[in-house]
Amino acid sequence: MKKLAAIAFLLLFLPVTAHAHSGLSSSMPAEGATLEGSPEEIQFLFESPIQQGDMTIKDESGNTVEVSDIVFSEMELTGQLAEELPNGAYTVDWSAISQDSHEVTGTLTFNIAAEETEEPAAEEETTEEAAEESASEDATETTEQSEEADVSSSEQSEEAAAPATEPATAETPWITIIIIAIFAIAAVTFFVMARRK
Image (tube, rainbow, N blue to C red; front, side, top):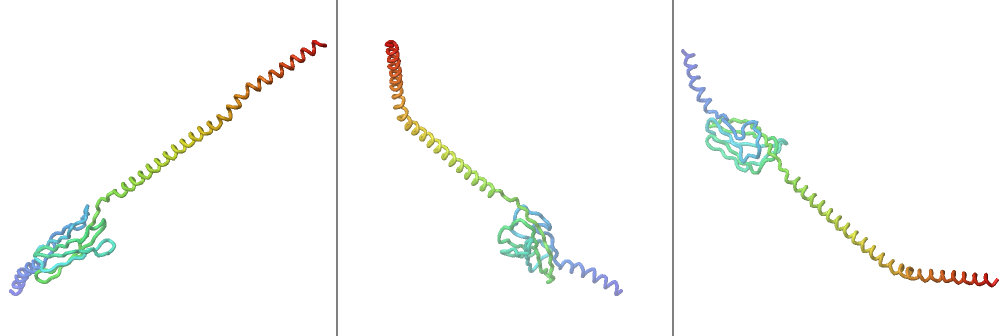
């Protein structure tokens, strides 16, 4: 009879005790989830009401991540993040006090793998292209100026050489005439002398 009474007492007491201890129902992010961006908050939902809760977030290097505000309601514990989280692995250690003052704790892990933008690279390419265009324009201007200088120098050389050449051209016919005259006089003289003999 005593055994039956003890068994009946345990059957009645254990479900009440189990229900009094609050267990975790779900979380956001979910355990082991990989996110495409930083979450705005970390949320835990419990199977039964809680009267207190807290959480601590750390990155993969063990540095504590700032949580701006931690709020708990009847069956919910929420932590607002102070700033966006970079890519990496994160661990959330949470604790809650159930209505029967029993403390429950747990750990949540999640990852962030957001796509990295390539805007800085595009800006660098634009800067490099602009520099190359500027260098090309400078080289073109330098080449044009050099060609203009060569043309100008060539024209000046031709102008300087022209006066020196013209007098020589003008003097050449007179020299030829004088030489021909000398030969003619010499020939006539030789012919006259030969006839006298």
